[in-house]
Length: 380
Image (cartoon, rainbow, N blue to C red; front, side, top):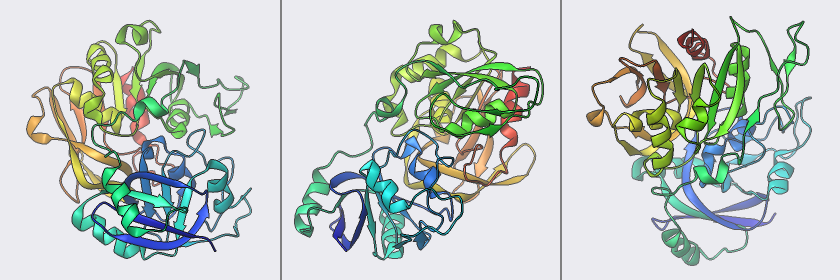
């Protein structure tokens, strides 16, 4: 087996076996606690500029297929696992994780003590790192990690958002309850509209495809626009509602996106998730801050403060809204039960709300899927 290494800016170096692509890349090293859904995680644009470590020991068991994708490609800088399963055992598999990463040119590292890596990240916080199958000199790799660009202050949305407008495809047969197909890829979703069809403009900052699937399933027609369009361009579509998507990187640098959201608050019903949640808060005058190691996984407990109900949620973010800066017009609606950070807000006078987590949750859990119906009712 070819060798590979991961070096952190604090001087720690891990040596293991290479799989997938070959080369050298840098990024913020973080971890995800999900036990399944690695293909959805790999294709989530929110991981742009990051090297991800999975805490589940064996990854790749069920291979990959064309249906479990959340975007047109893999966006992360590197993928780290304890053990990679090279021969998939699931009947749905159309390929192996090894070949999938290789075809995308993404470097994989296996055979390291991922428990030790995750413990270091939890204690010291997420760090910049370098992963390489070419350079095995630990000293050189650490120097490269220390000189690599940090994630804070970088505009990564520009690298993943679409270049133009598109429509999420309409039902193939309007006389039945059919499958729908997006304009890119080959993934499908069942349509079960809950009421009158609403026209939603989704501002795409790096949107996962399952968001559009859920919007359609809740009874929406979806037009996707690049996240940097102006408020006037959005309103020109005469939408019933606007959806603010997830996306990568530091929300504080997205001043143009914030201005667009500010221009839409109070003029059209709005709902945001993850980065979209942060942009809504920023547009109302709040600030965000960098979490020590972020929330990434499918087991984050969140309380709905209005009902007292606890949801197990899927999350992927390294920034959060600073509660001390929250303006009076925003009310906290959801809270993380692990660290108490804000997980949701609603506007007190405008029809606008957001959550920090992922209610579309591919590959699960689905406790928060009801929020798409909540957004549909907000547009009534």
